[in-house]
Image (cartoon, rainbow, N blue to C red; front, side):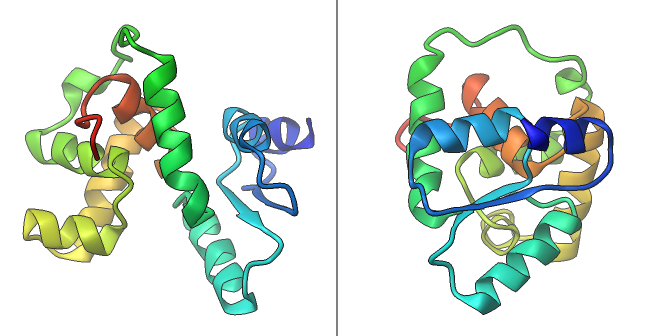
Length: 154
């Protein structure tokens, strides 16, 4: 897959844009390291913002895909895999932010929930990604789900 090659070689970030709203396409793109997944029906301003977000290291998912993706990953891993290296190195606040990412919250929503500034959220996300060796907030959200850091009803 081209996404895996581009991301793996560090050539660029990848935002998948497709007409297919199929879970298997989303899963393949995320496993390959894509920074985002949108449908071609996306409005131009949202697409431009998504490109900026992916370049900035944030993950972007088609809104109607987000909950399905998180639920599928949570359901497919009834037993949490071994914690990755770095999970124990997270500060309490970084762990809270990771949990919020797993719940599918945006930076603004996390800021409101934790009573901190959006810039502070971005700092915690960045540090958590570095400590966990992850490339995107989508990967962090999946990790949070797999590790049971988010209650299943979120």
